Image 1 (cartoon, rainbow, N blue to C red):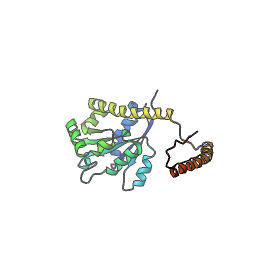
Image 2: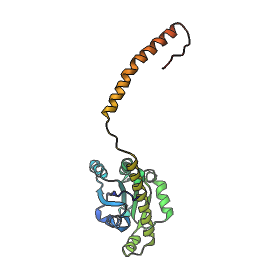
Image 3: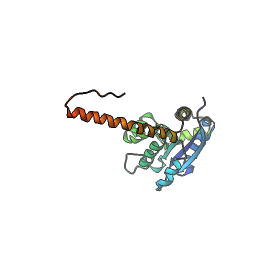
Image 4: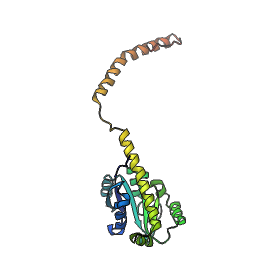
Length: 219
């Protein structure tokens, strides 16, 4: 069963030119089996525009560039994406969100773990974090970056797992619809039940007055 293709939003305070390489990557051949289109989502001080844009997506990448000076995504002084990351997780599910931190000097596992330890909301509200260096991007453009190939495979695996899950849910669960006939049946059952409840109440009152423990028939 082929996975359902998704609309992927790249969410950032950076200009589109900063993450154009990422947009091109996700729009490329490697992701064509799981991605239908990629939508840039500019994060500003207007939450309404952001939330409305996210509603059009089924997956999100939160993008940050260290060219701003720091890796201040969440949970630290002057963090940039506290509320936005929470909203993505709430709207799409944390399994449909990951974070990309670009223009890093240190992309080691130790650095990654350090970021997650100091900014735990990233782990709480996303599927993971990818650290990308300028050298990696340059080598990827030249078609010679093994580390980017590995990260690309991991990104695709995350997306593919979620899109397959979405398709399975779609196949098994039908949308809920109003059922006026069903409600009529319920109303009829309530009316039919009322005389029996009154009879039970009368019997209970009788048993209480005579201080007798009786078993009331529910036939």
